Image (cartoon, rainbow over all chains, first blue to last red; front, side, top):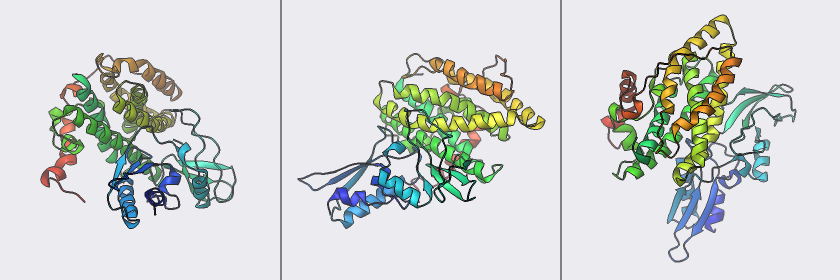
Length: 157
Length: 241
């Protein structure tokens, strides 16, 4: 398997329904044609994301399994990751797993916090935020007033 | 201050010490959601601290990495502003510190995002989005407690009175820095004043402005915080898990 495809299949360790490619944190995969050395560039969702070490290890493991043992994983911070980088396919997978996908970010630095979030279980817009901070740095905890189910919302960043 | 190293070190130490203080709330917050919120904000601060201290180490060029700077300096070598090392106090004091710090860090990181230093610009662009959430969270609690019961109002006003004098140090002029902290004061005031008004709180008029953190002269509270934060690394150099 070519290194791009191998790295793209690595799943996010904290949201295991979505790959790092769909999440938009896989920036580049380059293979040196002479040496065969692979350089993967990733970016964190949040600066303190504790999953980064696991993601780096998972990428190296996936590349080794695909025949690219000589690999380096670089981390870059610019341009900063935004939830707008989550692919359409990724959004659909989040919703299917009961995680409400983020609304689009309209202007850099401006965070809109109170747009209606649809319940990923029943589709109702009658929802409320329970806590701005959830089980991981990138999620908030919400509850549906129609079906009473609590759910995670990947908050716009 | 002297140049980019001291500047990056000061901001990195602000974030690191704030993270350590916030983490003290873990398992002790008034409700579970707040426990998770404070831990998440602590994690954001720690993330920013790691980027800033790593960069400071590179600027210094003496071979010190983020761990060496975080774990192997003594209190007099830390450059954080005093406000972040103050004890957590009650929940209102913690929220006053969170709110004031975010109201300073958001315009700071926003200004950094446009500065000529590429590394600081990247860190600023990343961190400001997280600061926006911190500010919102702090403001929400300041309003809820200030405009709440008689007791919550009393405690929130007392917290604002206690923390306010320490905010002045954050804006000490440093015209040579990539972003002059003094230039952030108007944005801070524009953020803070309406929130305090809505919370029915009074902005303190006291002119007392304790300072010294940026030059390594700290309150005694920092030494205890560092002892706890550094003990493992110093007892077991190079330990990993």
